[in-house]
Length: 319
Image (cartoon, rainbow, N blue to C red; front, side):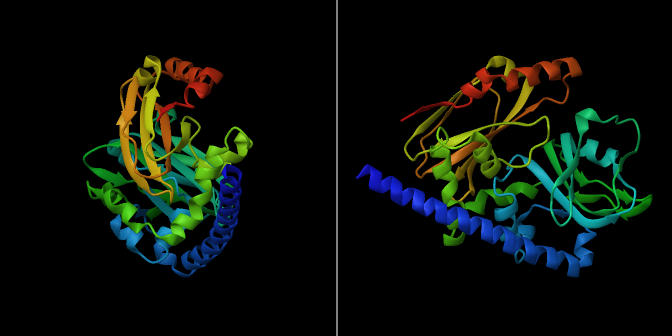
């Protein structure tokens, strides 16, 4: 009986995997055409909000390009825009909006990561930070962590000319996450059905494959811990006090359709999650605190990269 169950489970997961890959390509092509036609949209900041995800096509795009929702960050996207030599980002707006932030430059239309800018690695004395790029089209994504009361997406210059002005965002911009699970339907469930299965087969499948399918594109100083969680299964996290003291730890629990169920910033060595009512999976985003010195940050990196930490992040799961 058990072998029949696993045969069915793996068969459905394989169909889901194929379905996801096909939909990602098709939706990506449609969205690329949409942006090419609607050039006005490409030259404006778009930020994750109820208004944004309610627009046609946006939610399917996000559920295929970035389905592991970052419920802890305020996120803005811009582009595609043409660059001949360089673009510049307004540091003042970004630094005043969050304790830490990450801006990632992607090629267009391939969406490959070209470079990332991180607040703790940039000299914030100047007004602008310039980035040299090869001639081509690019998109920009920015994530604000531990945001300020006033949130403003930064001004951008392209090849020395003003491209977009700073854009103020509402303080409750992320409130849409509270109801996002209500968007669950057969389409999103079918897209991400295979994720739970491959996480359960984590000891069998290559870890590089698991990471490639599950993890978002993270900044170099962001570390991840993750696993599946069965319904009625309690989760207990035991985290080294050194990590808690030195890092911001962001926890998100996802439904099997990859829609967020709950999230919390963890600031204790022991964290317990009540047993969920459905199968799903979780993700820990671990980022060194921005006030750390370079020496301290390097030490934290060494701790996070050890096998002991990776083993610890398999997490104690109790039924």
